[in-house]
Amino acid sequence: MTGLLMKDLMMLKCQKQFFFVMGVVGLMFLVIYDNPTLVFGYLTIMFSFIPLTTLAYDDADNGSAYLFTLPVSRKGYLVEKYLFSAGFTLAAALLTLAVVIVACLVKNYAVQPEELGVMVMTCITVSVIFSAVTVWIACNAPAKAAAKISPIEALKFQNFAPKKTKSRNSTNGGKLHVMAFHNVFRDKKRAALVFMSLFMGITMILGVNGVISSMSAENFIKEYMDYNFEYTDIQFEQYEQLNKEVPQFDEHFVEQIKQLDGIKNIDVQKTVWAGIDFNENDLEGFMKIKYEDSKYKAKGQSYEQTIETLKGYAESGDYGCYITTLPDDRVLEEYNAEHPDTPIDMEAFKRGETAIAGKDTEYNAPNTALVGETLTLTADSTDGKATDFKIGGAFYYDDYDNTLSEGIGRRKEINMVPDVIFVSEAGMERLTKEPIISAIGVDIKNFNDLERIDSELQAINSTLTTSEWQLKSSVNQKELYNQMNYSLSLLGNGAAILLIVIGLINFVNVMLTGVVARKNEFAIMESIGTTKKQIRKILTLEGGIYALISTLLIMTFGNAFLMLVADAVPHMANYAVFKYPVALVIGLIAAIFVICLSVPAIVYKATSDETVIERLHNFDS
Image (tube, rainbow, N blue to C red; front, side):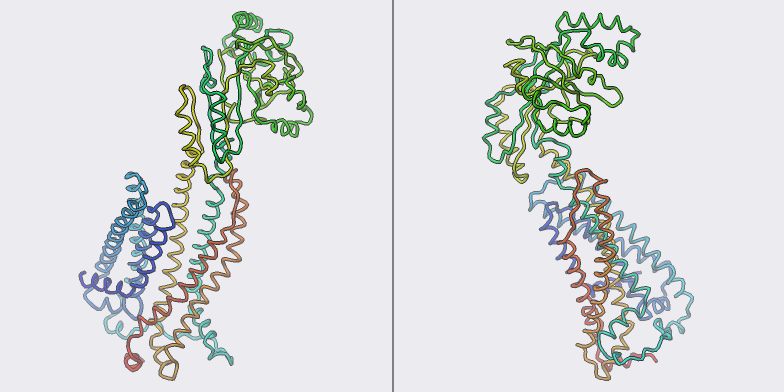
């Protein structure tokens, strides 16, 4: 057991260049990403693959057959691989964790201990289980086969026996690039495995990042918030507001916000409660529809009895609803485009002559029965007087969903009264000169100024002496999005990196075993005049062919897959706009070429320390 562990540790010394490359990539991630904890998952999973490369070393050059001529059992060999893989993964994870913690302290990145603990346990568990399963699959069959071979036969065994190949009569046989091409496809299955691993890994990481980049925080906020910052007076959002509302904001407060640098637009919504004159003829159509789905009918009260109850509310001054301004006139244009059969007279609405009742559902639309009727409204203010408004239209919920008005409640739960009535600024002036600012919507010019403006608004908020208000900030929505995006990125990129690493490990193993298997072939080539430089060039060309074919697969089938992703993105999220990851494509292809062109030469250098004479002496004919 100890000897096997020492053997594997000595083998890892031959891969110090690979450790160096992974360390450089990890440092790059620490610099590029704001969240250093991402590096932990990447390096832990990467390091979990390293012990598996020892299997390729054992399998090459009759290693497995030779090992089982020694007092090594199949069970002992498997146990050693399990212990070595698990121990190396745990040691690498602890080292990486220490580096990540230091990076968090240096970058002043706040990470919750619970979040870090869950990620550490998940990554280590996945890595150890993956290593264990892979070791079992990779060792079981070769160990069974090797254990059946006698020691004498094992020493004579040639794993890479010559195969009958098709003769190639060509004048190009001596050209290095032709030799490299044929060497790549000596073992077609292994070559196909490398191509597919690299292709699938890179295509998946491109697809994941294409989806993630399409869902930007700015688009997310635009979808779920009508404004970057939304102030609301919560008195108007109560199920029942029995007391008269106290103003929370004033014009001076609005003016302070306007003075901030970077403000693009401010919409101010003004609201007042108004009593509605109870005219049974004007309200009859509305009330009959409302009655069918009302609490009065549910309690067994007849329509006539309900009318008497409503008259009692009217006499006590409780029959009415909130009247609020419509901040954006563009909604009327959209309404008229969607409902050409029942258009709203926009000019009459802007002049304050008409109002809009809301909001209806497709199932039950009582407000539509008010269209064309005239309601007499009396504002609950010191200058409130009876004012007639013709109902020029009725909104369904889908027609107008501005967040400033969607939460408006009621003074008293009467049930058979319009939920809300919309008027223009001119209409509000006709009704009262003393409306209350119930909501403020603030949009900014540049999304990058979000945190700065949020901080300045907090300073202005401190001047308010009232407390029945709330601010909904895009900063909070941005943090929510970043948390969601982080989880998606971690899972998606983790799986994609896993596939890429598998592809690279397959490539390294193919090159390693290929070079070891052809050690005697290279010795013969050198003995007849081929230089080491030419052999390195052949191997480099082989790596270039792997990279080139992988690139062709990515640019054809990979791009076809990305087109499918682009079509699917809008269905995944309404706010998503697919962006082709050009920079990532270029970066990944460049990385694949660098790795594929450099690894073969490194492997050849590491396995060709002996002289030609020594290698020829070791040739077993």
